[in-house]
Image 1: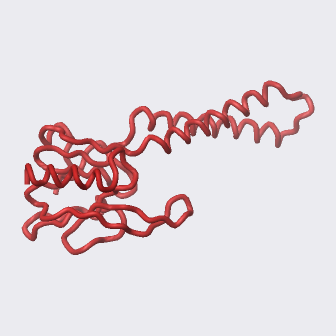
Image 2 (image 1 turned 90 degrees about the vertical axis):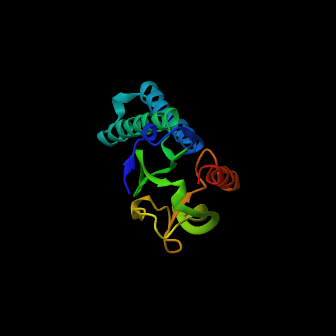
Image 3 (image 1 turned 135 degrees about the vertical axis):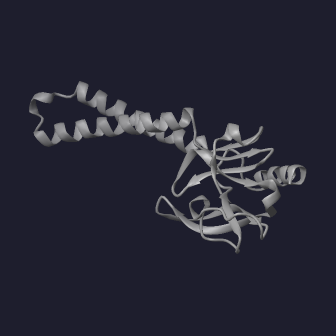
Length: 184
């Protein structure tokens, strides 16, 4: 199994990017934190401020600015989760982050695709996540564990996130099944 750039894996048929809603909310929070702190620092009578107030104000301004910049970057160019090409699926997950290159799983190596739900944690809350399980043929090369989203599925399979992308759940499954029928 090798990592491949999307342009080298054939014609791109479907791109699933990480959802922009969360990035937009974070950008808004960062902007409010940075802007509010900036206005507060500008409007306050700073002659009576102690070192702690200056430290807190500077820290809040810096934190808000960093959150704003990082989330705005993600909002403008979101991480790609999956790329479907005429050759196969590129899985961009590598451990806990999404990379520009992806692990290529050829359509001919996929035996079946189905939707599954797993329990997990996100932001301190217990949640149910939809995943798509790719069952691989016995002769297919194994997919690295770093590309597997969530707990291990059945033997010779890999899970991909179907809860957080620009195409989700049943719609993503249907799109991938159609591509698998056509190119597999």
